[in-house]
Image (cartoon, rainbow, N blue to C red; front, side):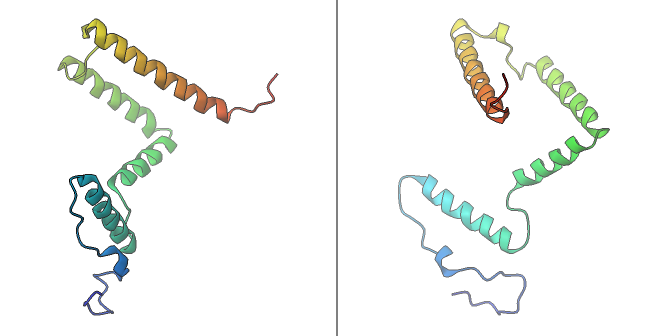
Length: 128
């Protein structure tokens, strides 16, 4: 049980089930999941956003809703991609070996298929 003063707002009241001894295993993923869960639960109790990616998602959605800022954002992203291409941080398809090209194109086909299935679910089924 927490020994903090009950009126101290700096420390949220957490259930005892969250405070368990560390697991001794070779698989560190289990420990990571438990630690991550505790971190997210703690942040939720404090009234903060649970993850940093949520902040990014929220910020990007806010930009997408703004008709002035969104084209500027897209322009900045295109410029960023062009700079990466110039610095050779992005591999172009023409620079790949034949084996890497096959793998990359296979990934593209799978992604395209996944996207088409996702978009197809949103479409009404009675289109004749």
